[in-house]
Image (cartoon, rainbow, N blue to C red):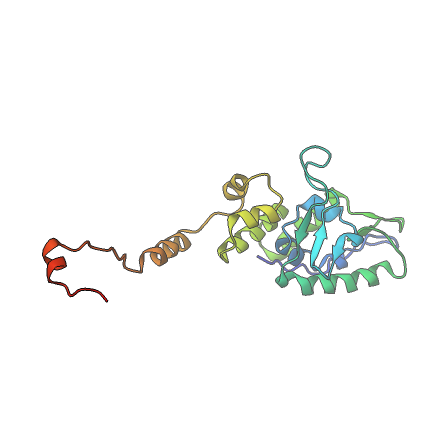
Length: 211
């Protein structure tokens, strides 16, 4: 699911925050599987557009169970959106610089990472404008279900989502659809099973000798 995000009109005032550069965000999230916090605190340097991966610098479970050096993929369907976003980001910074992948400009003009509350407000505005009720977590689930529907093994989906086990992936994010399950069963059983039948003693006596 890709939800179009129109450029929102900023509040009135000379230093009102601008959200136009977030227009590609709904296309990036379901093609990377990143959590809202992970994309919100991502750094521009985390993005590798040669390998099409993004290093998860602030993963869930950081400092406890999450391993260091984890990455998330950027699927082909989201790569152009990312390229467009990078171009918008340059225009937003207007010659300035900030390590955040998605920089946020405060009312006083200072740049920062996006606050969670402000990102939720943008999400709410998108929901009102599009008429589609969703959560940012829904976009992560979309990533998992799209991959599973295309036949990606659940182990690969789970690894891309950085889950500790496939149980979490299957229970909360991606389940095989009934049609896909039945199709797999039909493929497995559509070839007739061939069994070797041993010769009877009479057949063995009447058959010509080999060689």
